[in-house]
Image (cartoon, rainbow, N blue to C red):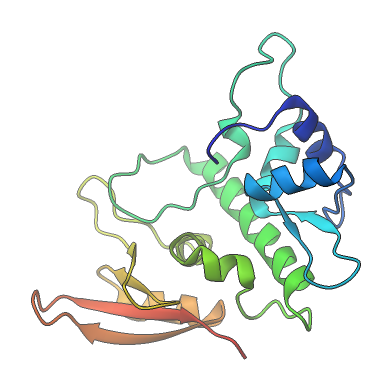
Length: 204
């Protein structure tokens, strides 16, 4: 997010339906939450607004402490680890965050795919390819590359709706992504001869 939500926006998020994540608020509040990546507008009538995985995390974080009303709220924003220079977060707490984010993403699929399917990526994933693929890998227990430790790296590519996955175990990564609704192929880069996966979200 470019900036933390306002107090009024946080109240809308905290007031979301605990089961479905459906939001109630003014048109301006809901539009602002969509811009912040905390909500999405359902494509089918009546076009209600629902929390994204990041919105669910913010709601579960609870209200900001009264002693620090102007403090930003990074704890409510989940970021999938794409591999590289990222710091390693605490083990147990990170596992809970990843599990909750993955469950939120499954709910997002159920609510936004036209047939309610959870076995293939939704519109949000198609506009956040790198983060969506990285979340699928981390949720399955794969470790990202960090500080010289081998692991996966997920990177954008010039191709539409395609990401590249590098690492020491391409076949297990491919199996995980295919189970999560992606289609994968293994390729060799012409210049570096490095092997990598090219993965795209499946449509049917």
